[in-house]
Image 1 (cartoon, helix red, strand yellow):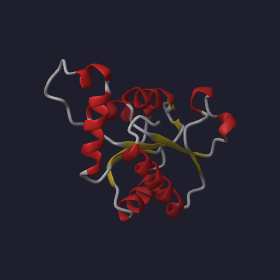
Image 2 (cartoon, one colour; image 1 turned 120 degrees about the horizontal axis):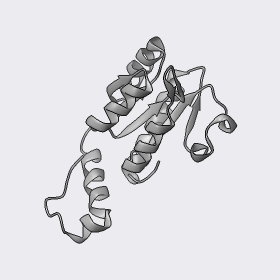
Image 3 (cartoon, one colour; image 1 turned 90 degrees about the vertical axis):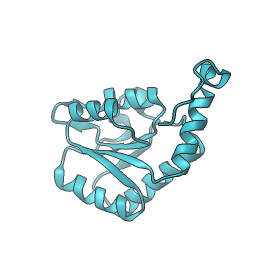
Length: 152
């Protein structure tokens, strides 16, 4: 994520400068996608399909712990996450992404009503997977991220 050089600029204080710098950075390169999926084969298939569509899958995680660590240390532009991992639900990661202004979508068998109330308005892609449909939805999320980095 690009940073402003003047720490006390009005843009920095209001947060608008961060969004504008992030938007400029996003528009100049491939989007970096975090794919958080507990099933290794599904993750590999989705990663291949997303990369065929011109997105860069910079990381694949299989647990909540891995996902939280990655969000803390590696720059990403958007995330596609399963709701349920072997070590817990992905809601803490979704909160962290939302706080950072990084858009995400859930990829899950959960229905909208089964998702935690805080995240029922987040984009939700249903399994079983149709990789072409998933890739199209992630590309749509990417287009929205380019226009408005504050979406979730």
